[in-house]
Amino acid sequence: MKNAWMLLGLSGLLGFGALSLAAADVTGDWSINGDVAGNPVVAVCTLKQDSDKLTGTCKGDAAGTPLTGDVNDKKVTFTYELDYQGQHYTLVYAATLESDTSMKGTIDVGVANGDFTAKKQ
Image 1: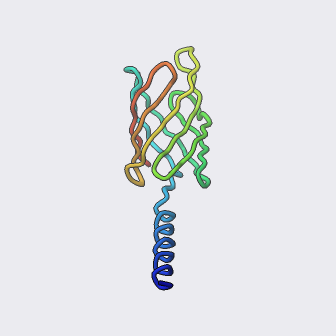
Image 2: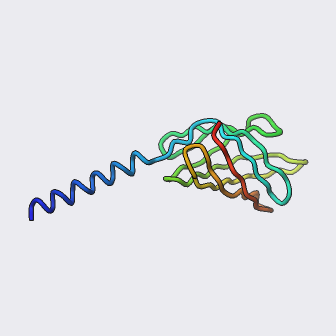
Image 3: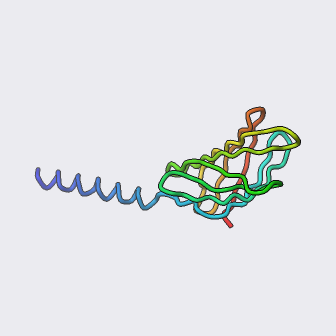
């Protein structure tokens, strides 16, 4: 019985270690292409991951805009503010990592939603 408990504990530790190794690191430059209500969204976002927190900037038509966000396993979310055609918007990206260099998800701008893909450069 003692060996069974040791084996169960060891397999639990090995499983936890495998999960830790599988955690994604999204640090780097990401090329984003999307669409919100027929409006193209094209940007390059520089993401910096520290544990499960994201910081960085996104550059599109404007200079680099600061962003904040989170990473939880393969789920990535980040937010930044943007002025577009005289209107102020908060863009909220929610994505799933498809690989170490690819993510896909949605963009919520409050008044409309859309989809995007991103490739790590």
